[in-house]
Image (cartoon, rainbow, N blue to C red; front, top):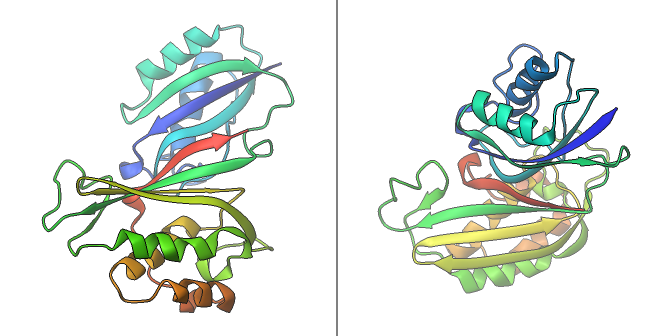
Length: 245
């Protein structure tokens, strides 16, 4: 049996997230599996490096699947390109060692969050960024983000829907940069809780708006209480940027 690894890009705007649902296949996983099943005439289950929520996008989602098909990887990629919706593209594909697992072998993941910081929103970015019409103070946001670096209990930054037993995670880096009116926040960590990046962004936005001080990020973190943290930033600005192995 062959093990195929793929890097997938997708616009998650019109999908119900990455993970296949029992009652609806309008998911990234469902769409890819359906096309692969038709090509291989096998029941295919793809394994993703992580699950992105409804409305979240991906620049570098890693997946793998097992198959007995003799089709070349070039043929598989072309078939997927022809029959998947235009909003899902297989960026690269290769045959890998049988033991490779997209989720279990991942060392870290990087998420990107985009903010359109302008008085009037950019209509071409409206589906892929969070519009904030008041000027954000990036230096304060950078100062606040430093309290999140390292290994911590991120209970304050996890949705109440999170089912993980442990909320301890390690954030390796947070980078905040701006080009014209577009702010990009890169968050790299060994793993993330449900809505964790979006809650982090929502909290840093409040720092940037002067609603809370940078030091209050530490207070929120130490409280280990979701009710203490700030609002969850919208899904449309979030991208799974890269998975490191």
